[in-house]
Image (tube, rainbow, N blue to C red):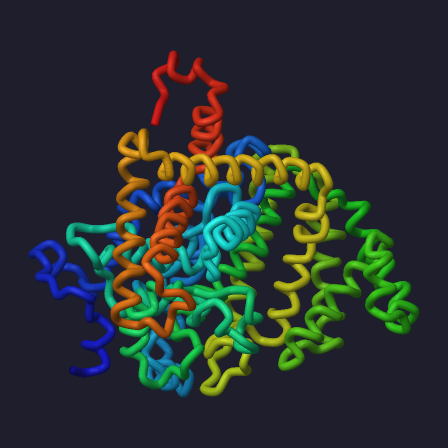
Length: 497
């Protein structure tokens, strides 16, 4: 079998119909359409990106619009690499290729594993999975994405999920290792990962088509998707917060000016002292630099960071943010131009490396753009995500998830009423049971516990987490209200499970 043939291989062979065969790259076109027609993809329209859709009129991004834009940014980068006939194009082909449709499919799918309430939901479900059900792998949005594609979202055959090609499955493996295996690759040992133990065999099959890609490294197509996600996240969240009037120009300008003014003094301080005063102007920006320098010494550069701060300060802080968004057509045009120019700039800043640094992919942003994206992200991480009012709101969302997980677990543990539990919840528990028993039989070394009782406990836990994480924000609050018995009026309105 040729390398190209290996890339289009599926877990289960299938015959394409005449309409599918009429397409260019039919195997990959089939994949992208299966993803786009998936109910898991559709639910992203009702999953919060960072702020609720009611927060800024009609234009706030949700996970679906974010994914669509990531796909557009990724396709443009992939097209440039795919068409390159020089040394870069040859290197890309040697490393397995960069097909634009594969990249689009991966970008479309990359967020389908994200649970209700964004990253707050991810952290809460991770804690519940480990504490309530002793699932040492917990919950991770990227790993959940892979599990959905390859197991939970069945196309028409049991056991193979959407039955996607190896190329697309591999392109979604953003962190191609299990929890605790990342080490010093692209995430800490307890941070990001893209596969649970029960999904390792499928992931190994997908990556087997890329003999030139080292273990623990992304494929070219995955790296392009990853960069596009960073670009879209850094700019489209900025777009949302600007439209919503949440970015206080004076406060942000004070941070940037104080950092530049007090830089010499800040550099003399120990990091704990800066953390203790992180609310003082300039200190948070200095902490950002120290975090980059510590985590990414392979690319972090003080001159490049200084230049990135200067550019963001000039174009965003003292440019875009000086004129509040008023909802006018002129304001829309101005914001659209700003975003488009930055996207073009970052798309043109992509490099390909045969031997990337251990915390980078084969495809990466150049040093200048890498620092610029870090500073752009800083704007919303520091001035939005750290807001006290958001923290209060998120604690309430976390409580909703805790009640739901505990409520469904108790329902499954009730011998008198378990038969009336949601059918899909029961199906997901049965799938997880099948997975854990199969893993005990075929790869017991991947389990820390193999007793029947413990595996059943974990299967119930994984099934509950799979079920709750697949809900939309509204479904989550609705089900919580129903299970707590506080919304009889919902039944009067014709709403139910």
